[in-house]
Image 1 (spheres, one colour):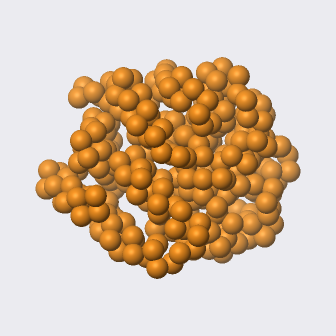
Image 2 (cartoon, one colour):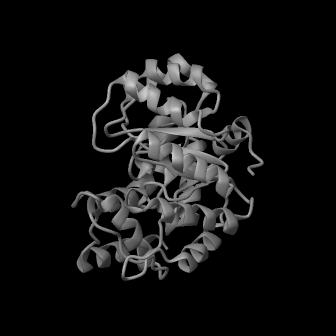
Length: 304
């Protein structure tokens, strides 16, 4: 059972950087629990405010319900209360509810509610979808707004009013106008999490819109560097932030943007580059080409 009430969880998550670890696979694409636990143990040497197991960087979209439960349980056991563990709720409303209940039973501290798959939906339909999941457990819920589930400010406010356990809004769109509207309407009722791929790119400007933390995929293979970058953002040290953007993040983006899906693949390539392999990505994602891995390795070496 979690020690975090939704209010406590919100306070904790907004206090620091958020970790979204990859999910480790063997060469035949089975979940590699031993390697995953070893990875979490290494990451635990660095301070973060929360760990999101089987999130987008963790290829939640490629896991079965049984595998998701296994990943979440491994994270809860390995972290052992050092930081809160949030589990995913994905897919249809029924599937998301089932995952939410499984996460609560597994001892997770909160939920990251992903967009429903494949179908488009009205704002009213999205409000009902989120509400149904929020009301399925007592866990605090961070709602991920992206893809086919982009919530406008009125919908965010409606969900927050109806569901005390909705604690956070994760932005995967990056619209300055929409974030301004949302914060103006909802204010500090929620915490706001940056959720765009390679969120470091947007961290400084979004800070001014109430987005106090973000999901760092780079933390997987450059944990110390990622913490230093976050500290520079929170200090609003523009010179240091832009130095690091030019030094590493922008060249990294140049590799990432070459192929759809590389936002996850390049993180596993980064782990290969630092000698901590996480295995391949599952289809429909594809791994980086050898030349791209070498390019990334050289880029990492320049800042190590």
